[in-house]
Length: 348
Image (tube, rainbow, N blue to C red; front, side, top):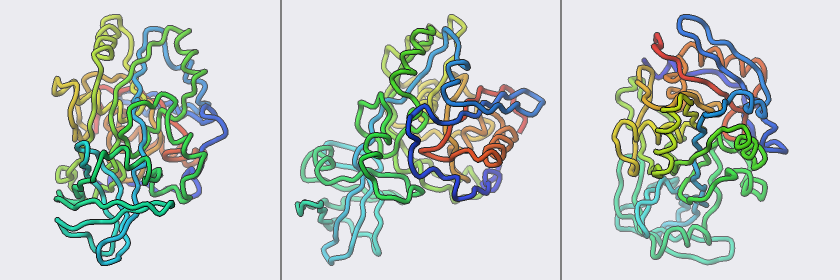
């Protein structure tokens, strides 16, 4: 398939700029795929996810925590530079995206500053395509806490504020390293998680540190030429055991978000429970472990739109997105959600 197969027109006013008052206030579009038939689309409220899961199912969440990954600084020449952490590669090193009139050369330094007037310098040490590796003078995380800014997605037009600091994190976030939220998890609060427990629905976690590459548009019309970004993931032994037990008992594995799904499918392919993944899922991909997926609505021509199309069928997703636009669902990170189960033997 070609890149143009994954485009759609979205009215700008449907891009959610702020979260709703409560995490569970979102709408939920249920997609019921059927082989050889158009999927059934059911409009719901997010709280009704309690009706869509069954005792014995396993919900797998991504427990990554968003870090203050955006840095502001100047080059030696005085030119303004913005660094966005893509992923942290060592105690004092990270891969970044750079916004500047001219990217600083390898071996040069960028002076980072904060509102308090404090400064430090990072050294440019290499590059790989659109990402650049930099060296920090001390621990990356400690410097980000003092100098970094919450990295809201490019389609959210306001500067990050106190509301974003709270709501652009999931309630289970605990492992710092992501530069974007695993947005499907933003819909859950503690009360609904406790209700799953009383229903006999199991919960487990993986960690996948979402990278800035998740917002990088696909530019190759021929999808086979697209170079997928890397993201670090880890799956605890307890989660692997819970998956095995769920499958043996006939329960369903429900990935909360595409990030959880990519971690789980990467492990199923490689057998490795920790490492970096650049798994690029497009229609025709053979899913090995995930049965159902909760996810938000994704950008046109994005790798995540290709992933959900592979999972539920291209035509089903096209119909679902058009329905969501017609019914004025809210899109992207602070937007509404969709619940879909895997379509077997999808005809592309």
